[in-house]
Length: 321
Image (tube, rainbow, N blue to C red):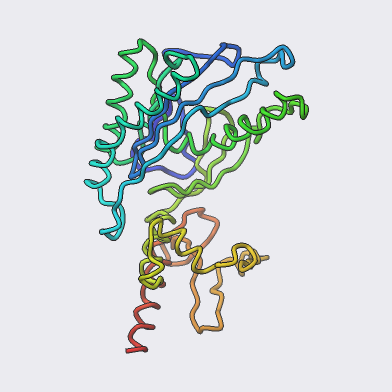
């Protein structure tokens, strides 16, 4: 398993905490897991299996990843200006048991008794919420006599594209529709991770080898977008998830409404872009010790961007009386 302790620093490497108690390879037949996620306000349960290689696909690497069951229930924090920790906790406690029962009923209809192992998010996330999922996962692991795998939330996000490829491309190879080219994206690859309180640029060199190249020095971009949405959107458009509501409000026609030209030079990268509405936003870069902003430090600041948005909206309201 992977661990990131304390404050994440630029170029910090995620490494193994200890050798895993059990290891599996793709050649193990019928590999499957029941997975639980309770790190924030979403209660998610899934069952994932790796199909046995067929006679037409003798190489075990071509086995298809298949989602047998997946369902998510989100806590209703609409009465608050964001996710309320206690509301999210009570939601996990109320619905997780039913989701697990529903997943196992689906699994039983396929003629199978128990998964190969149980997996659950172990962090990062809200500690009390994580505990709900981990306690249930530990109970299932002991009851079935199968291993428990604690999953690092951000590592799972970084590896999700490879899982999606295994579910789509492998299916085509499994049916003889294409030639296996290996799991994509191939290592090494870069990922922008924006999840919960994290915003980082990551270089993944292997399943358990990840390097943080850049991150935010204050709030995450998701937090910035949520709070900006609450400052900008009219009441009738303010529905969670707030980031998506802001996107739909700004770009009602989708990509047809969106136009962005990347800055061609470093000087342009650091400059403000004026708009026809007489406001502009600076780049979300952290200032150096002498007060200068630079992209070379690879440290980003979204708190200042949010403050500019909130200040502009206050001025608009004041002007309208």
